Image (cartoon, rainbow over all chains, first blue to last red; front, top):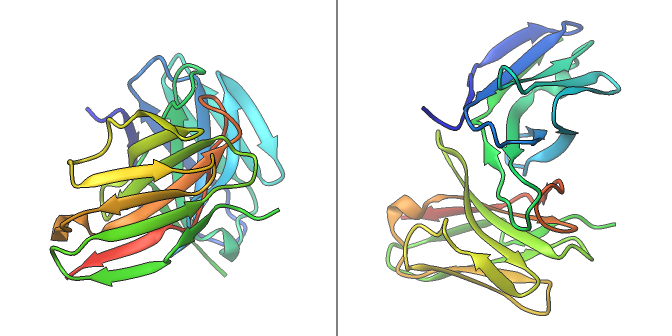
Amino acid sequence: QKEVEQDPGPLSVPEGAIVSLNCTYSNSAFQYFMWYRQYSRKGPELLMYTYSSGNKEDGRFTAQVDKSSKYISLFIRDSQPSDSATYLCAMSSANQAGTALIFGKGTTLSVSS
Amino acid sequence: GAGVSQSPSNKVTEKGKDVELRCDPISGHTALYWYRQSLGQGLEFLIYFQGNSAPDKSGLPSDRFSAERTGGSVSTLTIQRTQQEDSAVYLCASSPAGGGQPQHFGDGTRLSIL
């Protein structure tokens, strides 16, 4: 079993839809959870950063972490064509210097106008 | 301010040649990371620097790979005697300190080995 599992998609939705992206993980030591957005031929761009369980909202984006289920989600409300990208979940364990991020393989999202 | 800068953005070279990839982190960021992104494989951690020291080299795939960082700033990833399986996007990230801090990525170097 991979440490982080993420459905690669592709996921296609119409403009204005609510999008749900998810990752599951196996390492209970993970405490820091991130979502990155990656456009074609660009580097990953940090979207959301959360610590431990709970919800965090930023504009149209909401990140949820359920540590008991080892499950994280990113919701996008009122999706736009500009949201079309690959979304990567990432996580890391204890707050030690040099802790590498463990990434999911990414979900490709396409929002049609 | 400026983000993480990587150069070259693209590199095509012949098998067996050596290549150098450069990363200029965000000013003031003491932690620097190299990752490799291969098609279908996701991002794979290669090496981490805190200042000029590399306490964790565990992700380097072979002894053909090496990296250094000078002045607590610019880092160079060197691949010697390149092989076709080295073809990938090499991404650099930096953060203000170590674990628990979000990492900010450059746009990567797309390396193609012919």
